Length: 209
Image 1 (cartoon, rainbow, N blue to C red):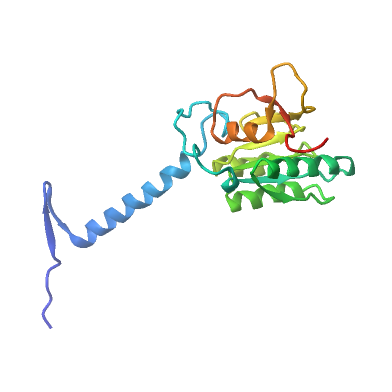
Image 2 (cartoon, helix red, strand yellow):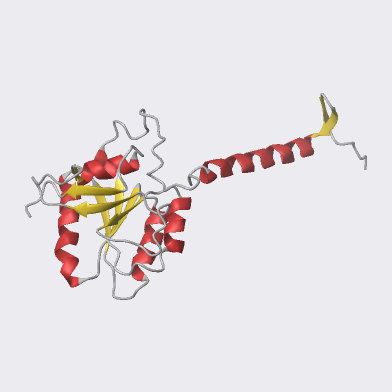
């Protein structure tokens, strides 16, 4: 049996075996694959609230029906009507909501957020019932580069890097201080990372109140 020396390639610094070259390229590819993930999470800012995206954005011209919205509804019976109205308004404005009805246990809303992160929706809207215990679930969304909107809700402590905006529903046709968006335009503003206030007034357009 004849043993052969490994094939080599000449470089500027000497002779490298093909096996070593392959390993080096594999390492470079692995590092490159991690870069987009690390870039999803802005430093000291919320996803969807950096207000640094250029005017020419990826979602321009995209059919809104193709933009998935994860909506975690409230389990409170008093908010059932609002849950339904939000869904109707999103659908009426050609958005595609995915609804997760909260159960009575405290962790069900947070589990729903984790599910929407796995589903890779474009934005997650939460009508928070219990303001505590949200750090891990919202951190997951932030690391995934998915903006979060709190609908008529708050979290404790109020870590403003975990959510892009708080939406406050106002009556259609009203003129609140600071103006108001249709809920579809408000969501697109967050998704596209355009300048906006942390607290936004929204109208459930396309529905009868």
